[in-house]
Length: 254
Image (tube, rainbow, N blue to C red):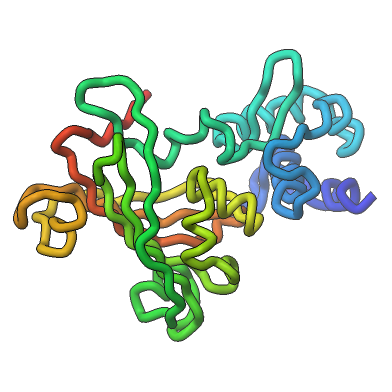
């Protein structure tokens, strides 16, 4: 009843009103609220289109349009003959969404995360601005190497909201065998929905050159990323240096 009452309230807006949203977008918003609240967890199946249509008292076509948009945004995954599932970072198909490095020679090469440090700190002006928190609020800082075929390719410095990732430590990072985002999702209930990246060319300084096994001054890619969870809430800010001697940053545009 709570969902239905809310839906009836929202659709009263006029198509010319600044607050007007198409009905399927309103249904999408309600489904996303279910994902955010944990009603349907990553990897779990969500109700069928007909069940959701009955729940929200709308047509099945409206629900289908909402699900189509959610699938396009990688919030859910349709599996032929099985149903629609909440997207998860544990799915191998999600690996390439947030790591766009591929071998120059082609093919796929698995990566291995090697945590170096993890400590608690207070947010300075830049971290506070990126994570949308107050200066001085707790954050967690992680430094790690990302290796391909046992060779270091990326050095990351990652800033996380301390209130969201309380309990994260170097021992947890070292014990985890899958991707960092699957750790965040499984251990802390935080799923990264989207990210913004800024990329520029830089020269390797001495510390990064030593970690990556290149000469000081070698060309590197600097990749700065802000990652968001549900509600467009930034929870991670990272700065990575990428060695592109044998790898390139790949993106497909359509």
